[in-house]
Length: 561
Image 1 (cartoon, rainbow, N blue to C red):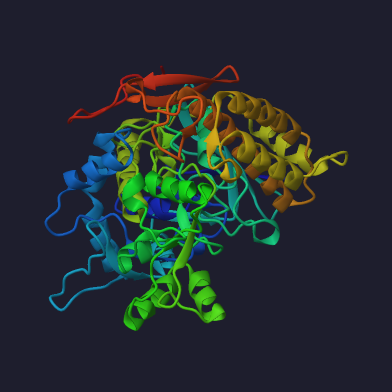
Image 2 (cartoon, rainbow, N blue to C red):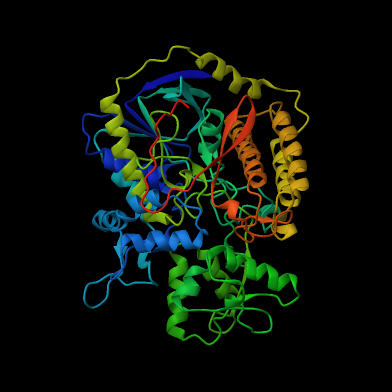
């Protein structure tokens, strides 16, 4: 492989929602060189690739940022970082207005006010939201974008970030990127569990299949503290298309009903996890299938739904058209997705302070990869990108660049080349990935077990995942795309390892479905803590931290601890 070196002041890993907005923010710091590295192309990468039809985190008229904090706290049964939620919520409206100035179309009423969709949402035409973000980031004079480069490892010395290693996904090029500060915005982790749809449709899932937990994995292996992986996210989706259900539930006030036409929402509760749990239970008890009640809505409402889904999930609109039965004629069947680890909806991710700095000095996290701050959605990711960018700039100016003392470039390059040279591999990446998903599905609470797991099954899952990690070291890649698949698998396996440790660490069932522990089926008073972890000497060590609540603020006192 050809070796290339790059020097920059601030490196942004991941050109998604948070990464692009961090780049836009750093455009104001003209004396700081910024590099955004993206394994795809920033124009259509990340969670916003296909667009979105609403801003789901917005402080509507009559509401306050604290109201949003209270909502997210209730939904997560209290396991949140209130200081992170508040610092995010205070910026939601400002970043929304910034996006409108960049060209995002936000729907308005006759008085020129944003059209609300529920208490915390506003309607947009967002099919092109990602190209708008990417174009604005690329326009900054001090920001460069490097597409099609996959970052695999942080360069860390004495708990201080120094840069990252990676490779080009199309060409045999190994990259060493030195930086004084790094912002990780790589998103969450999909593909850990067996999905709803098999075979050629296996990637028709809720969360982007290209988000493989890379940022989590790099941080875990570098010794960063992680938090709340056990709060998995399971999405309630339209059956088969896995399209979002909130557009229907909020857009036409559709109730959740079972196969007998009975409303079951109030029976189980209205939090995000309870809506999934109720659907699982009604099906398990023979009262399925379950639906969103849309039959009888007006033709105007139906037309609005057709258009709304074209902005982010066109497969749902196409399904209605192909079957010849729109939502006004037939209720929409719903199902739960497989579990994901994603800090934009739950609290999973890096343990950070209010400036979004991780426990590694100079490494910041934003968006789905940052923990403690659920229900952030698009605007929350933008807000955290802005917070992390401002803090990274401050860190860069306050801390002189420290050169790397131990040069490991050649060692990393040899690691990449070993996969490309290997001609004796017995197993394929696809076989190990399928096995991993089967293990997680059957032993760690996947769809086939109604999301339930036990201590005994988790310990068995841990053994099997560790074996798969060892086997993954002996895979072969025929080209750079094959090398990419190997590293994506290894990232997922590391995340699985930490997830299992966290599920074992929370000895209760605080969130039905999200963490349905049959060994401990009830809530526990002892559960009002954060379950955190660190990788030490090759093993995951579980840490319990007190809640940051009631106006308290957490800041790192010793990032070398």
